Image (cartoon, rainbow, N blue to C red; front, side, top):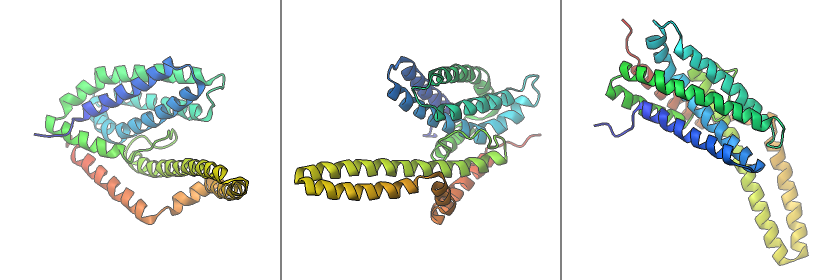
Amino acid sequence: MPTSIDAIAVLERDHRDIEELFRLFERSGSAARKKDLSERIVRELSIHASIEEQLVYPRARRLIDGGAKEPQVLLALEEHHVAKVGLVEIQALSATDARFDAKVRVLIANVRHHVEEEERDLFPALERAYTAEELHELGAVLERAKRIAPTRPHPSAPDEPPGAMFAGLAAGAYDRSRDAIAQLVEMTFDAGRQLADSALRRGEDGVRRTRLRFARGLEEMRAEVQPAAIERRVRRGTRAARRAQQRVGQAVEEAGRELQPSVH
């Protein structure tokens, strides 16, 4: 018996996790807390949309939209696109901006409507199109794909095959490189604070030396996180990491192709 959960359960779990973030945002009164929650919403929705577009929607479109009067999957793709545009705008705003709260609440309403339609119409159609074994195999593929999916919205990237697969891999590598650099910056600041605390205990001479070292470190880090520097870093990257991303992507793509039935 398969030990993984099936594809529909994976997607429904994502829906529940995202809904919990929505509720936390709606209950929050703190601008800083709302900004943190909005960033988590951006990340989770970006990952979820990517795996659906790469691995779920292509087959669903052939099997469901083919003979339907209303193209459910095309409508879902357009709803994804509108959501991504909203996510880009939300990312660019501070939590104190007059439009921030309104934009997040409109996004929440639109995503809730999308989830309701998807769970009511699309998921039952997928259950009819797949065998139980195929659903579990696809569930395992979706879980693996989430680990390399983009963590930020890319509304201008292709959302249909074959471009969606390659764009998703490239965007995922880029986003996760940016995430790693941002984490490095945060760690540097934490280390700087710890050094300053230690220097205060040692006396004024230690404080002055620590300030000089920390200032030099911040200048170097500031240069590292400039967009141009990030672009160069991502382009060069580590060749081994890029080859690994490509190998994983090929494995995901092959698994996705194996789960596509022949259309007679």
